[in-house]
Amino acid sequence: MKKITKAIIPAAGLGTRFLPVTKSLPKEMLPIIDTPNIYYIIKEAVLAGITDFLIIVSRNKTAIEDFFDINYELEMRLKNSGKEKELEMIHEVANIANIQYVHQKEPAGLGDAILYGESFIGDDDAFAVLLGDDLISYEEKSAIGELIDAYNKTQGTILGCKEVPLEMTKKYGIVTPKDDPSKEIFEIKDMVEKPKENPPSNIAVLGRYILPNEIFKILKETKIGVGGELQLTDAIKNSLNNRSCYACKFTGERYDIGDKFGYIKATIDYALKRDDLKNKVLEYLQQLLK
Image 1 (cartoon, rainbow, N blue to C red):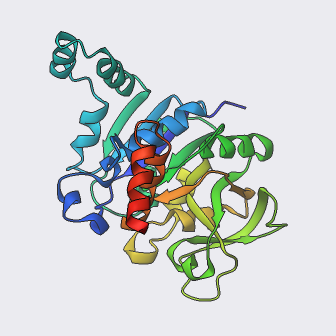
Image 2 (cartoon, helix red, strand yellow):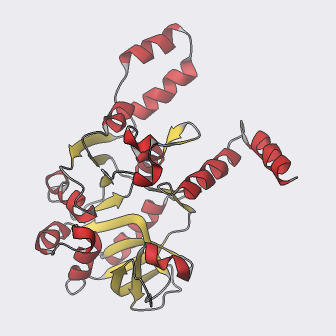
Image 3 (cartoon, rainbow, N blue to C red):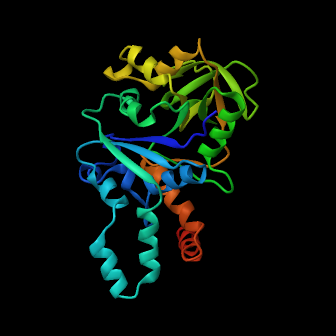
């Protein structure tokens, strides 16, 4: 069994919930304090053993490529100014992993975006998918690391999941458990994308996947779905007869960075984790409560 070392990050969405800023800035580049969300996502995967990334971008998202590229002029200015800490920081960004990019011609769904990674994945048995909207905190093991462990145990398709309030199930893909859903890893028998009523459970798929190589073949055979787009959920459903699929309830806190409140919550929580900010932020929050 080959180790999972490759990941696809779909980042070609229009980010309409964050207009007007996303007219020129990709939502994946929205900063959590001083660090773009996509950097946290890549770092999460690197800690899990991922070495190679393919980021699916649209034509106007060169800011992502620029961020992970080397900036010789900036490096020289920092070096000449004696700002060694800042110089080390941007070196770490540029050298964090092997990153490639491909442009999605039009926003045609998550399934379509993943198809762009077929040649990148090659003959690897399985690969990771991390959505650019989802920031997941961690202490020791990252969320994608937990999914990789689940894959190594089961050899099945793995979906990163969390319980959500019932009134929120209409926003997510919701799984139907095949066995005990109270377990950290359990098999599923079906899933539905954004159920309008009567959800099969309150367990939602939230932005992390381990997919088998055959998903590319299945995606090509899957019909266009909701919104006139090729849906990954539909392809996973079509694969259930041939390969077991499991939900892995990861332990970290998940933030929806594509949602304004989710973004604000992440910014506050991450500020409270930083020694240089937490006391000032706490003091300010206490003032507001008064």
